[in-house]
Image (cartoon, rainbow, N blue to C red):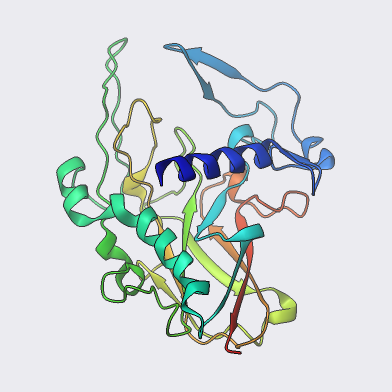
Length: 279
């Protein structure tokens, strides 16, 4: 299973670097790259590259332009299954089980801290002395409630109420909110499918990525970091119909990565298709 996951991650990275179908480099079209200054900075610290912000006014972070991603993601960001055929949705259930295993409360209590919510968890270095390894805040699986896979081991797929998990890309040093307000997720149907999406529930209930999980200090400095998640539960999708969903990140912070751009379909949003068949 570890080798399969590694292969999938490698495939994701290759497609992100160059997508032959959409002709996008690092998630951006040629016109989108034209918005970003050619003068960007990568610097080496302690033998590794760390991404920094572009120096022009667009301030786009090069390796993390995707912004958001979903789990399970299926093929081509499509989640399609037949509720009558267990094998068609069980793969999604297993993918969610594997993804959420590190978020089990028992694991989080052992490795991470119970932090104070709604404020940044700043861990400054002391001059040249690195404050490493840095601690991380607990994100407990139980926080996902109906989408945790604990009370309903099928994550709603069997009941035609599927859960989709949303995560933000890791961006070193990003402070995504201001004045104690955390960024939050909202999802809606694309215009043509607005009558087919039905009500949506979010877990945690406000659909937010709490400030206590930021800033992120990097994989080597913060080895036990658990990315915060938002679960979206679709309560009454129209059956036997394609429903194209767009989820966006909302923030009161002036971060370009969160701003919707028609030239960059990954900036600040993720678009995917849901379809539940009954025949």
